[in-house]
Image 1 (cartoon, rainbow, N blue to C red):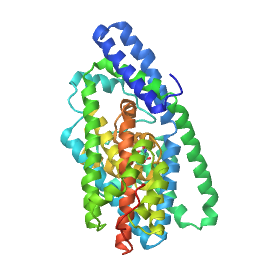
Image 2: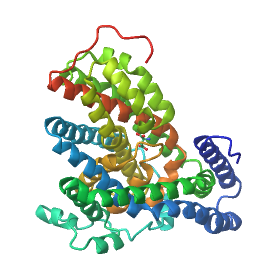
Image 3: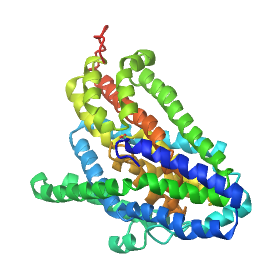
Image 4: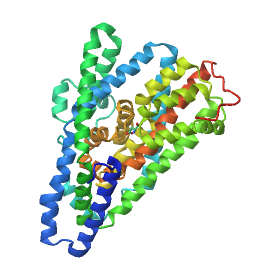
Length: 430
Ligand code: ASP
């Protein structure tokens, strides 16, 4: 495929080619030996190679991203009142967004409705991903649940694929980094940043295969199961979009009105260029410079607060990403017929919040971080192959939320410090 087209366009083409040829093959030759052999021995293994290139760096990614993310947040808390407020806001707003997503996905159940035998076929074909999947059957209760998260040996936890314990360990390392003397831990932070950069590079290499991987995975899915599965995929997309829209325009409006003391209409009007930029770049990081200018100039947030909250928020406060992760995990659980207890769902909330903290503000930054959540609650991680093809449009929308959430946080913090001075008129640009 021509390298001149942007990656997301090539992935979309891969998605279309996979679906069209897969559905056609299913109609013409569904169940015939040659088609079964093609999916079993060619397209499915190829799709899995692509996924495994990503799975294999999930462990170092979780460790470095979370330790660095928490070190950043911990630093914030050390910066006193403003840091503490930003920290509290991030956890609260992210928790709210995941809860909203989970509510929607439980009510609409976009992944449900596959016939039993189709589901059985899916489960039989599902790989076990980067580590043995241990579905939480006899879920521990009370303090035992906490005990299960705290590893006595982080290496064993990593080898066993106990991602929650790995996340807990990473979190503690992040706290340690934030609390230890800066000069002493600076080299370790540099190493973690190096590790993180390498992981990102490997993922970028793997993503070059994405158009073909997505084509192979969707061919396999539709050639085996027919066009019926597309209904599930479409309603999943709609649920994510509905969740994002509600959080963007209802939750943020309420927050801006009651905690920010500003008119939501004025707020959205004045940040519209930022929203458009976030939408078109799919990257909180790329939108940060413009967001800084607009938050200070159009909304009257003092520069120190805008700089601090937005810079931290562009990686740590990712409401859209967290909502998307929660919905995706539950959708895939429904798709594969994995029943998630209330406790497992709470685990999804917790891990999605952490994933929001650990995700980089770059296009598709959150995709690899869905894997540990899936593994922990016993959903086949290869499920992310199903959503790869539709991810770009979701990414564009969740990035708008991520960035709006950061600006909202800056307004709330400034207002609580009584330093918000919304200008009566603003220049036309931005
Ligand atoms: N693209 C998102 C951002 O930059 C991250 C993600 O959810 O993939 O905010």
